[in-house]
Structures are given as structure tokens and as C-alpha cells.
Image (cartoon, rainbow, N blue to C red):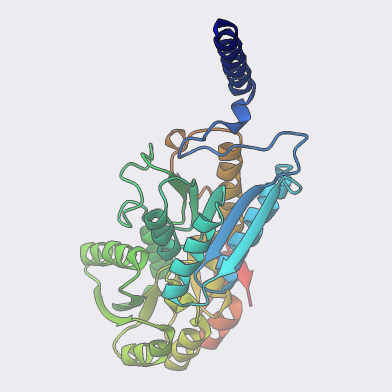
Length: 339
């Protein structure tokens, strides 16, 4: 009996030794923290899974997505990542469904483009690293409390526009403006915050303003028409609802002889007059840089929310001609132009 007990004891000790050895060697199988990605080994066929979601198809958002993917390739990750891209097609319920799919599929990193998708991602998971793109006001959106030191599983790149620069440009190009009209979706946090800044700026300047709010793109034409005769110029921020139907606003504004100043370059390309706007190619590359840092093992708390590194003056020369604006060649030297 003693021999049998001794044999069992020896076997148990051997098993403990084996398990302990496996634990020591199996560091790559240790659970990750809620802000880290466990990169596959050089010999592994596994790929890092990245889920990218945008709320709607639009040139600016598409440009961001394409630049993120290109940026990851430039970091040498083309064959090391598996990217799943989803478009919510302008339906908020689709955003929640897609994010739930990403969480269920255990994505290593989720990259939501725009505020609404980032909010949905943040509500859905506290374990998967989230790197947002083009969230204008992350604090106001409830994503982070401190831009310099994110405390959860989320960081990213803000596309907050410099409202003062846009209005300074407006008064430089069209100094006769007495009243500005605002068009935006009041349900978009980024738009509401930008409009509040615009109101404060104009109040300091003694310039009047009127506003027309919308809840979906089908209301944009009527909103634009409501400002005709009331406003000398229109300002619309980086508003996804307006951007998705920007040609409608542009056409109505041109018919009324009103210049439209926007928050994004793509909105000028779609018929807006001018902006000091966001270069979304640069923004996408910055997002890719952050994803790479997370893949390399850096904690999100060590990665501050970034702002855009480059802005540019953009003018639509076709719109300028349609409005009869007096634009000289010397003025255009400081602009990137689109037609």
C-alpha cells in the first residue's frame, strides 16, 4: 500500500512540475490586459483581427478608412492583420449590430470612424482596445475624461475643426457678411459642440446668426431653403448627416447666391465654397500609427488622444464662379483648389 501511495505522490509531483514548466514557457498564452493586443509569433499563422466600422458611405469617411489600411501596410502589417470592414449604411441600429458582431468575433482592435460608432463601441466592450477616428469632441462624447491620459480601453484621433480659423477665412473672402446661417444635425455631439463655438465667436464679433437643424439628410433641402433670404452665408461643421447629402445643400445655396463654409475638405469638393479643413489622409495615417503602437504592446493609458497635425485652406473654384466671388490668382496661392 505504501508503494502505491508513493507512486501516486511521485506522479502528482511530476504533473505539477510539467504544468509549472508549461506556464513558464507559455507566456504568449497569458491573458492580455484590457488595453493590450497579443501579437502572434513570427512562426504563427494567426493574424491580428481588426474591425473597422463607419456609419455611412461618404468620401471623407472612405478616405479615412483607406488611409488607415494604407498606413498599416506601410508599417509592414499587411500580411499580419486581418481587416474586416463594415458600413452601417446610415442606420444607427446597424452600428450596434456590427459592433456586437465585432465583439462576438473577438476582434483584437476595433476602429470606429466617427462619433456615433465610437460611442457604440465604447458601450459594447471594456476589454477590446478601441482606436477611434474622426471624433471631434471625445470628452463631450463621453469617450474619455482626460485627452492626455485615457483611463479605459479607448483612444484615437480627433478631427476637431478650428472654428475661429474658418470664420476668419469667411470674413476674409466675403467681408460683407452680416448674418450667418447654421445647418447641422443637433443629435450629433460633434456638430452641436462646433456650433456652440461658432455662436460664441460670432457673438464676440457682433455678427447675427440663424440656424436650421435636421435629423436626417432628407430634411436638408428644406432647411437650406429656409435660410435663403435670412443669411448672407452658411456654416456647417463636420456633420455626417449634412456631408452625406452635401450636393443638395450646395445646389440650394448656389441658387440663393449664398457661400457655404464647411468643416471638411470633402464637403468643399461636394460644392461648398471654402474651408480651413481636415486632411483626412493625414488623420487616417495617425490612426494607423496608434494601432501599430497597441499591437507592439503599448498600453492605451500611455497613448494620448491626438488632434490633427495638418490643416489646409481649400476652395471650390467652380462654386466661386457660380457665386460671382472675386477671387484673384494671388489669393489662390494660399489655397488648395477643387472644381
